[in-house]
Structure formats: C-alpha cells, structure tokens
Amino acid sequence: MHYTKAMAEYKLIMPKMGESIAEATIISWLKNEGDAIEIDEAVLEIATDKVDSEVPSMEAGTLSKKLYNEGDVVKVGEPIAIINTAGDSDAPPIETIVEESAPAVQAIEKTIVVAQEVVTAEPIIKNGTNNKFYSPLVMNIAKTEGISAAQLEAISGTGQDGRVTKKDILAFIENGQNTKAPIQETPQQRVNAKPSTPIPAASTSEQKDIPLQQGDEIMEMDRMRKLIADHMVMSKHTSPHVTSFVEADVTNLVNWRNKIKGEFKAREGENFTFTPIFIEAIVKAIKDFPMINISVNGDQIIKRKNINIGMAAALPSGNLIVPVIKNADFMNLTGLAKTVNDLANRARANKLSPDEIQGGTYTVTNVGTFGNVLGTPIINQPQVAIMAMGAIVKKPAVIETEHGDLIGIRHKMFLSHSYDHRVVDGALGGMFVRRVADYLEQWDINREV
Image (cartoon, rainbow, N blue to C red; front, side, top):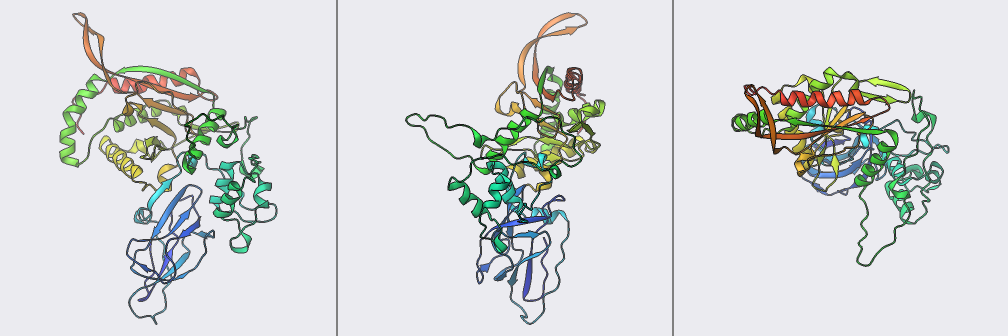
C-alpha cells in the first residue's frame, strides 16, 4: 500500500487485495475527521465478497477528510481519505502510486477470511432490473440469507444515491421481512457453462424450526460459518462423492523425519512437519494421474495446468480455511515446509490475503492432527477430489523377509480419498490414493533436506 507524500498531506489508498478483486465496500470508519492517527493504526474497515479487512495508515497525522461514506463501493487504487501530517501545509498533494508488490498485501491486518467461498466464486450481476448497484458484500449476504432479487430491489437504501448498505440488508433480515426465497440465477452467472439439471442446494437458513428443550442455548452462526455450511451442502449436491481408503506403512518415513527434524530446526529455525511430505507425494501422484487435477464446468472438463494444493487448516474460532500452495510442483521439500509453516501461521493469525485462499486445484486435510485415524472429507468445489491423512499409529504387522515372515511393530496410517464420481471413476480414484501411499512407503531413508 502506498501513500503520496506532499509534505503535509497523504492520500490513503484503497489497497489491492488480490488479482481478482477490483473494488471493496467501506463497512465502517474507525476514525472521525479531526482524529489523530498513529503509524499502522487502522483507519477504516472494508469488505469484498471474499475478505473483510482493516486498512491501516502508514503515516502518523490527523484525518483531514473522508472521501467516501460507509456503504460506498470504492475501486482499488482510489484515494479514500486525506491525512494531514506535520510539514508545509501549502504544498499541493502529489498523485498517488499503487504498486502490486507483496508488502501491499501484507499491510492488510486482522483479515477475517471467508473460507471455501472463494473457490466457488462466479461472476455476479451487481445491477438489478431497476439499475440499482449492489456491493459485493451486500450481494454475498443476500446469497447467504436466500434473499431473492425482487426482495433485494425492494429494500430502501440509505447509502449514496439510494444504495443498499450492509446495515440496510441486515436490518431487513432482522425485521423478519426476508421470506428466504432463493436467488434466481441469470444466464450471465453461468458464463460458457452447459449445466446439466442441477439439484438446488438447501441453505442452512431454510431449515424448519426445531423444537427446543429446557436448558437449550441458541447461538447464531457467524458469517463465515454460514458460508462454510452452505458450501458444504452445495458440494454434496453437486458431486456424487465416493471415498477410497488405503493403509500405508510409513515406518521409514517416520524414522527419517525423527532423524532430520532437529537438524532442520537448527538450520532453518522452523519445525519440519509431515504435511509437506504428504503434499510432495500428492504432487507426484497428480503428475502420474493428471485427470485428478481437473474441474467440471457443465458438460466440459477443465484440465488444470498448474498444481495448486490447498491445505485445510482449523482456525482458533473453530472455523475452517484452506490456504493454497501455488505451483507446488516447482518446490523442493524445504520450500514446501517453509510455505506450509508460513501459511498455517498466518491463517491462525487471520493475516492471509484473498489470493492465498483461492485457485486451488486439489486439497489435502490432515485429520490425524486431531487424533483421527480416518476421515471422509467433502470435496472443495470446484475441485473434483480431496485427500484426508489419518493419524500415524504403531501397529503389529507381518513383515516379509528372506528368512520368512515376522511380526513387528510398524508405523501405519490411513489415506482417505474422496472424489467426484461424475468424472473420476473408482479405478482412477483408487489408483491415485494407492500411488500416494506408494510414494510414502518407498521413502528414501538416506534423503537429505
């Protein structure tokens, strides 16, 4: 994020938050005109259809003027406020410059990421039949709450030029005026798609009331949980799920990791977990079976060139997020380990950017982290497969040797592979998970990292 210095004035710019995001809605101003602002202090909150963020100031001073109101939609790169700093107040402000560098993204603090929503993002129509403009945030709330286009257009907006703001649509919902009618898609929402007859996904808000019992507590889902819930239901309605299981003997792998993890920690200053090893094995298997790395668009199959691995991560709030390792096939094991640690740490701190949670082509979830030996994961749309890694446990096993069979203690784990039976048959789905297990079982105990 860059600000233009003019001795006494700086223009606070709407930050760039990802290649696919061109605008954001101002949710609320955290500072009023005349308020003092410290360096890195948040000035306002913004929202897109993918992420909510606070925008901090890179300079200390006083908020001179707000250029937009709450509920306004502002394009990326546009000035949103003027901050006065100590200096020559007569000097004219210089034009702002916005750079698409990594620090620009990292300047966004306290990100509340909408997990899973981004992977199903499709073009939306922001103008109604009455030519009203709706922000991405308002459109997303309408979709989540099942508000029809007719209902949305009937809401009286209090924003600029009668625009419907977040407060307007939430007030509409709280007043009980929403009859939960589903939004009707327009042809423009399915660009170049040839959809087969879809089964409408039931929204979590459409369920009938459940009788309450004494002592029951009612808790409202937060926005992120509603989106996750709707996404999971949609995935089940979209893809006929099949799950194949394989048990892998990872004794050599466990012994190798135990041998090198201390050296890796001392050299790199980071822990070496099993996750990058699992990801490397999946990447190798995808190269062997590229038809796992696809998506379905109506009657068309999109074969992905890039191998972008999503890794499901649990947040402190209990919600789920899936940061994505882009071009994982170009990384060595050390690079994967560092990337996994970085994304996991920033996910827990709510500091991921929108670009880092979209674009995945295959997802892995490590259910073994919670002590689970098996899992049947739900496909992360629009992908067609997902793998769950179970806990590694010691088991008695038959060991074949040149002197005969022996009973020994081995480290074993289950791999669960859920796939979309529309385009992935049992042979491909089963061979893929078997190949991943083979790569783990055939681990080179003399490998260096």
